[in-house]
Length: 162
Image 1 (tube, rainbow, N blue to C red):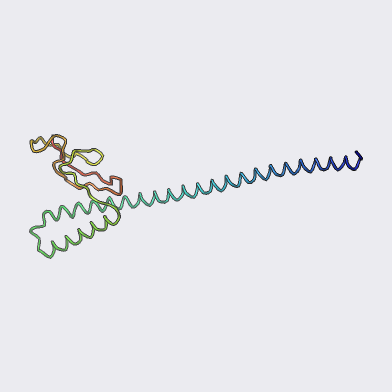
Image 2 (image 1 turned 180 degrees about the vertical axis):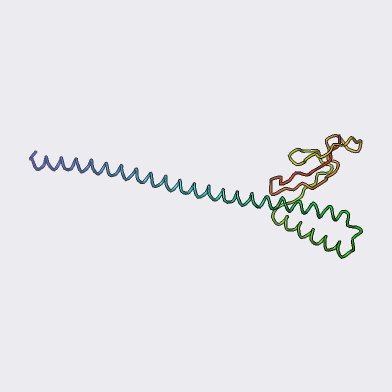
C-alpha cells in the first residue's frame, strides 16, 4: 500500500469516526428536542387544567351563594299566601328565572324525602322517633340538595326517622 493510499485510509477512518460522532450528537439533540416538545405540551395541558379548575372553583362559590338565595325565595314563597297577588306572581317569576339560570349551568335539585339516608347526599339536621317510616329514611327536607353534573354541590339538609 502506498503512502498516499495509507493517508487516504487514515483520513477516511478519521472522517468516518467524525461522521459517526456527528450522527450520535444529532441523535442526542433530536431526542432532546422531542423531550422538550413533550414537556412543553404537558406544561400547556397542565396550565389549561389549572385554569379550568380555578374558573370552576370561582363559579362554584357563586353558585353556592345563589343556592342560599334560592332557599330564601322558597321559604318566602311558602309563607306568601297573605301577600297581594301581584307581589306573589312577581316573586314566583323571579324564583323561576333563578331556577332556570341554575339549571342552565347544570345545577339541579334532587329529592330526598322518602329515600334512605345517605351521608354522601344528605346532612342530618334532626332525628325523629316515629312509626311513620322505617329507621334511616329521610322524613323531611329542610333545604334541597343540588348536583352539579355528577358531583354533589350541596347536600340536602334533612330530618331522618329513627
